[in-house]
Length: 152
Image (cartoon, rainbow, N blue to C red; front, side, top):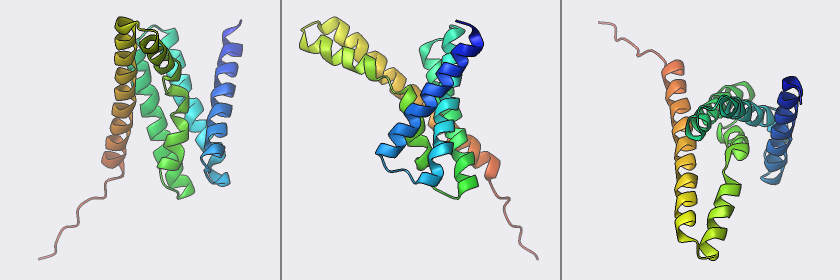
């Protein structure tokens, strides 16, 4: 499959899955499009880094950072809370299949595999959290108002 077609498929499905989840959690209709683009942008960063073999943790961290920055910008554009864009946007990054495999391995009694997969899920969740934290730090440093000086 040509690279341009792969990118189109990845962006399309991440956009649609983000919007579908946003509809399920009752995100306001005027925020759906930008929430979808936040999810698509984060997934595109993740997918690109995974194609470049940079590692799952870095890809998740930078994907979450992208979603966080998009959420901050979009919230300022739409004058809405950031969480409206961040929560649906992170859906493509959530390691749902890995979490399912961890629970399945645990139920089947394969404790070593279950522990390994659970650790992977926790690391990915941590990388996503750090990505959002870094986005918030960047936003606070960028949008910080200068301190008022007192006139003497």
